[in-house]
Amino acid sequence: MELNKIISPVLAIFKYSTRKILFNRRWVITLLIALLVGVIMGYAGSQLDDALNDGTTLMDVLILSFIMPIITMIYGTSLIRNEIEDRSITQVITAPLDRRIAYLGYYFSLAAALSLIMLVINLVGWVSFFAQQGMDGDSLTILGSMCLVSVIGALAYSALFLASGVFLKKPVYFGLFYAFIWESFIGSIPGAISHYTIKHFVRSIASGWLEWGSIGIYDGTSVGASIAVLAGVTIAFLVLGAMMFKESEYP
Amino acid sequence: MASVASSGSELNPPVIQASFLSKWYGDVIGLNGLNVTILEGITGIVGPNGAGKSTFFKLVTGTIKSNAGELSVLGQKPWGNWRQLGAIGFCPDYEFLPLDMTGQQYLEYIGGLQAMEKTGLDKRIKEVAGIVRMTKDMNRKMGGYSKGMKQRLKIAGALLHNPKLLLLDEPLSGLDPISRRDIIELIKTLNRNYGHTIIVSSHVLHEIERMTHNIVLIYKGRAVATGVISEIRNLISQYPHNIIIEGKNMPELAKALLDKSYTYSVGYNNNRNSITVKVTAPEEFFDSMPDLVEKSMASVERMYSQDDNLESVFKYLVGW
Image (tube, rainbow over all chains, first blue to last red; front, side, top):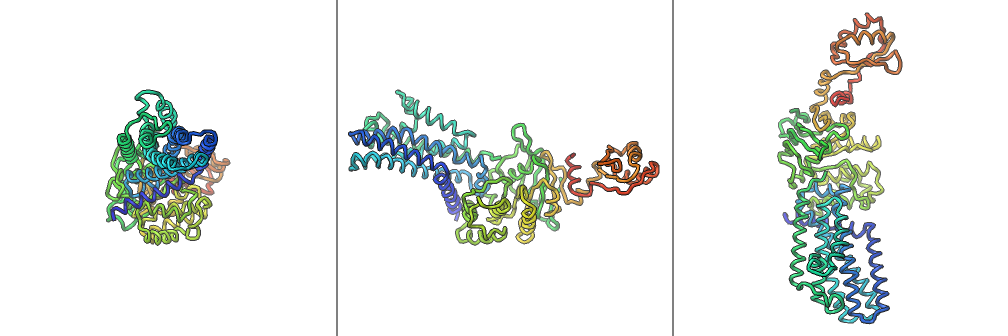
């Protein structure tokens, strides 16, 4: 009975928020990004001839390193913050539900929706490229690995950006800074500082699973350590976000 | 500290008790030492925009935290007390309904948040839709609802879990006269037939008067008066009265009135045959009027006070 009092509201928030993420007007942005990936990788697939290396590099540079932080930033920073701004958060915070549990409902919906979006984008890119270069067993390994690391990345980025929507009134500025300056720029410069990004650990995991392209030669952290770090980051931001959500006032 | 309650409920413990309750947002004061005790029944919170009505509701629902003072809702402190929200239904004054959902989907979502079981929820949604007279429109998207329908659905959402205490923040705001009448009747029905204790806010006194005789007048974050309307009317004598006098030779009467210590001001209305006199001691004024009329050789055709309705009480109490 007590468990139902937790599961039912979390499920309600999960369904409501997932529906909102997937079916609001921003699906056009997602569609355009998927199309962009399809066009770029489709064109590359018609020009390049080292399928496994080039395909892996493209998926790394285009999807893992660039699109994933941006997509997760767009959806993550706005999910709770938009509800606070338009005050639809009222229906959640006036329900007999521990706000920390409610926060988990938001996180699960964000992580699930973003994982789905990333899977679709990976699939579109992979099909566009490898349909021309041959869909053999190795290419399927690339798809499977990229999909899995995308899901792991989506889990971590979701925790970070969702929490920023609770901490900050304008989380999109933080999101833009993090996605474009920290992840893209700082994450690309030589030296240890580039290791202080989610992207580094996501790519490290991929480099442990794949031996082709830029990922294959990436000098990263071990897979186990990377998973542990990302899990730690995810849990840390989840706890911080949930505590902040619980303690915040919503005038 | 004054109390407001429906008759016969005085033996029950207070539903809400606030003492020196204060809330400020930076430099802006939301509530300023509010003292009020609210018992069962329907209670109207009345005050102009910005008086602190919504702040009070937010404190009661625990969405904001007080800066000073004590607040007890159903015997418990509301801040951080999420379990208590099972006994409270809140209908805010702003729009927040997801317009792309149907009424049925929305109430299913609310029922999920309330951890209501599926079978019980379906039954309750039908019941509540009937109470708010929305049964026919439950499967329509809320984007196509009128303002009155949205308001009824918001109330349905607040009612769904059958709370003991129902908080309705400006439920009549922006509604057409027919919808206002319907919502007023609904609020009375919810108390009379379903036993909900209801706290309803408005900045329009006569609307509240149609729902309840128990009121709390709030102004600038303070309860300037609480009690039943008759008690509040008694407070009139403590404040200046506006009395309109119509007849002949009003300028002479005005001069005579200006010599009296109880006269605060005298002014002409639309013409010189009508004056408004503001007096600080109405009983003294009425006692002295026959003499004044005689001395000024005025002829009074009509004399009436603007203060025989709630609007005037409110204006007096808030200093308008």
